[in-house]
Amino acid sequence: MLNPGIWLTIVAGLVPSANAREVRGPVEVVDGDTIKMGRKLIDLFGVDAPEIKQQCRIYKLAWPCGERAGIILSRLIAKKPVRCEVVDGNKSRQDTPLQAHCYNYENVNLNSAIIGAGMAVPDLKQTRRYVTAGYSAQIQRLGLWSGRFIPPALWREGKRFRPVGQPFKSRVLKN
Image 1 (tube, one colour):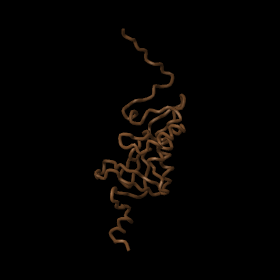
Image 2: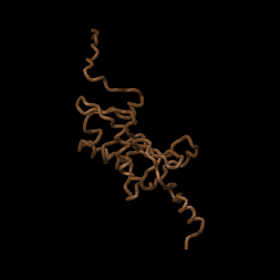
Image 3: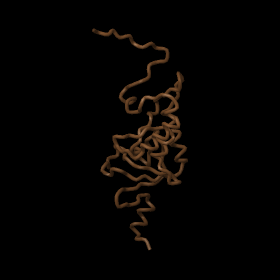
Image 4: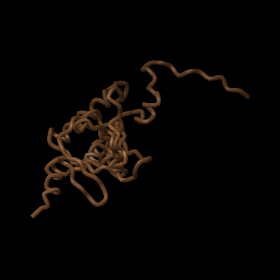
């Protein structure tokens, strides 16, 4: 028979673990690497997806890769509850997102799946866990890899594509 305290914890959606805290429940997709569970933001650990307004290119055509990353993550979740293993439980403030490895209702790792679909890149500053999924997407030319894109970290720093048809700036070489 389960201890009533443990049973209440499971029913409430928080499952204790020896190494990590787990949270479970319905989520709302914010963008390709961020979900919202209740009022708490959760960033997919080791994942760097394009921002919602970010554009990518296939030849000279722009496509909304940031929006598409959010759509793909929504499809992976399929409006079902999500289970997340929080990586750093030290962030208890409401305004700071938790970092987590998240799983959908079929126990598919969402972090790996969004990278494997080519709609995000592995964040090597956090972990090397998803490098293989990234290589696989790159080799198959999926998602972002089907054309050209500015890595999300550089896009957030302000780097953008040069408008189509704009010539290169000429440079004077000094001797």
